[in-house]
Length: 153
Image 1 (cartoon, rainbow, N blue to C red):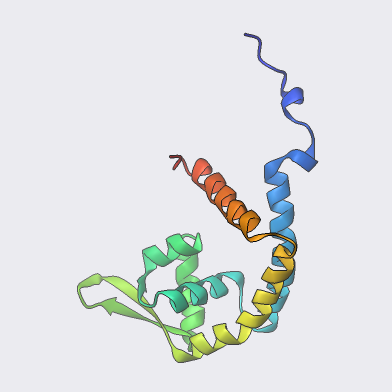
Image 2: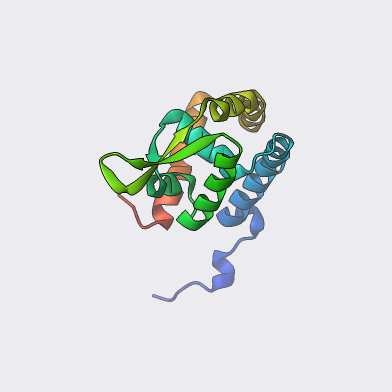
C-alpha cells in the first residue's frame, strides 16, 4: 500500500488542529491576561487560587500537576503569593516531607473579586454554543489532551 505524500495530509492551517487550538487559546488568554494583570495576578496565580478555592490544602506536586507547571515554577509563584498574603505553605502533619498549600481568606477574596470578570470572558467565548455542544467540546479537548499524554482508553 502506497503512503500518501505529506503534502496531501496537510490541508492548511484552517484545518490544522494545533494551529486552531493555539489561535483560540491566544485569543482567550489575551483578554484574560489583561484582566489578571489589572488585578496583579498571573495566569499561574489565578490557577493556583482557583484550584485552592475548590480544594484547599493540596500538596505541591498535586498542585503542580493540576496547574500544569513544573514544581520549580510553581514554587516561585507560591513565594510571591505567600508574600502577598494569599496563601501559606505548611508541613503535612501526617508526612513532614510534604508541604500543603492553604488558601487564606485574602486569597479567596481576591479570587472571588476577579471571578465575575473572568466569567464574562468565558461566557463571551462560549456564546452561541448549545449545552450539548459545550459537553462535546469539553470531551474533545480532554480526549486530545489524553491522546497527547498517551492516556488513550
